[in-house]
Image 1 (cartoon, rainbow, N blue to C red):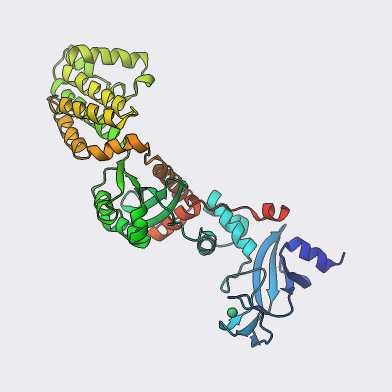
Image 2 (spheres, helix red, strand yellow; image 1 turned 45 degrees about the vertical axis):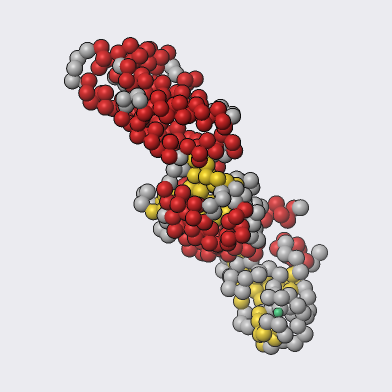
Length: 413
Ligand SMILES: [Zn+2]
């Protein structure tokens, strides 16, 4: 086999001819050309028989051969395409006229960005971090599903904080395809309205369910842009409000009793987790503490019972039963003489329909929060993340269902 044929096989790029190769300062420079003689327009791919002129000699970085950087070298022609005007010809190794890298190189960098940290990519691929950012943007734009906002019916919205909790992005997920479909800056009603605007009035009408935390801004946006959609409050978020009420009652009682030395104060010591844990996670010592509270602190024990019965109600399967039981629960909570519970009862009564809606569709915001954790992990792992755009690019790279394969795997198929 001739050396040029071996090189062509090693490069693994279709429609490419190797003309020559030479070693130069630790780099392998391979002179190449497209296998087609007649140049093609890089925009519409039609063949153009005349050549307008030649550009300067250019190089494209390809995947390394061992310790050697591989550079492809070629003088691209410019062609007068009848449709597109004078454009650079199509090249089989690159589809982005501004890029100094081959497509395989860019795919490899993007694949790595989904998985490993910044400095490893810099060292392994021998490129600067800023270059990685630009490559990722190009590949994500190219590989994304044509229109992720098509056929949305069940969506979830949530906010994600970055840069030490002071900055936010709003994220929309598709429950059916389990992926992030949209992201925007901020966490206000306007942030979410920007999503609905992009969706357009027709597709807004098709939205059936929106899951969310009890965020006033998001509620406002959904009521305004998609009034027919059913809002579903995240079950765990509602449960958390009730648990917080228990904790408030405990603190109140502790503030009142800790100066008095007696069994009532003693019963309250270190009871926070015993009160908040699910019944199936209670340790024997938790159970002793709860028994002591039952004897010495009726108010706090009532708070505990309220919390447990709320969880039991919301886990039931029949929406009508849940609504009836919740109404009973609400009047119990309002009459409980526990201020935090009276307050929670008011909130729950106000949003009763949207809470009961959970029982019907059983969707929670867990998916959104899972993505948030994934994106947050990626933030910490890799990127400097100073702009919302960078955060959103990373979220889209990791959570929008983009399947990338390492180049080696693709070639072996
Ligand atoms: Zn053209």
